[in-house]
Image: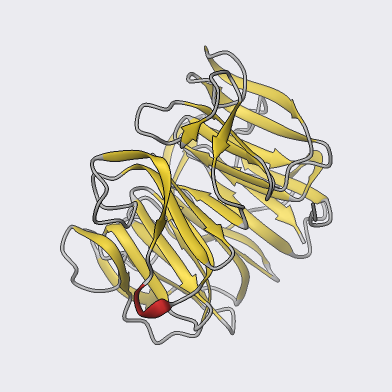
Length: 335
């Protein structure tokens, strides 16, 4: 199993048991090679374990459910991939995946055994992403999905309201997936030919076109931007082009105006990394990490309409390889 080099993890906001009155970027004191976040919790893949932090109401941290608000739990094992949805987790490597948490909508796939952390029947995993209640897996150049399907987020016309069996999604025109993303009730795939296919909830313009409330199967987004990356929020999409320019579309954390917004460039320095959560978005630039959207702080909700740079406690990361957002915090993995 190949793993990326371990690097320092940084956080801002409420993470684990650390409560901060201000959003300041600080070292988490751990090193990892992959991070994931959802509305309920975060996952950090370290050398020989996963550090899970946040809520554990459904056992999403790999242990027995507990109603206490903040937990930090260590899950032993060498892990390559992590994904976090609303009260569920996937962890593992290309050969073996484990899942835990709520399974009421098929989010954990077809489990082979019951238990707090159970084996999941999935194809060989190259990449995994989780929305609120569904999972998208890339296996080589193929796309597979399971979970909730009320908005078509599984991308399969034969799927019902939900499907606990991981099944393959057919991309149009024999396209081959290079990366997959999930957020809210929406899914997308970036292909080897540089195209973006979207499916699921699209009522806020996440598909970059007038597609109605939902797309039941993968549909090409009309986008002439040379895409380097894309991230899905709860009702919006964040895009980064080959030059580092950042664009958004949808509703909420768009940083380009109120209401539903068509695709527009965000007023930011050129970014080398982007991230999105249910209600907020982030971008890492040479000048620092910027956030916008709805931030939850100990003092209440704060709406940031335009990107704001997060101050840093001491020297911050020079470059970031991953950004993930919860309702309460941001995690950044140093490159």
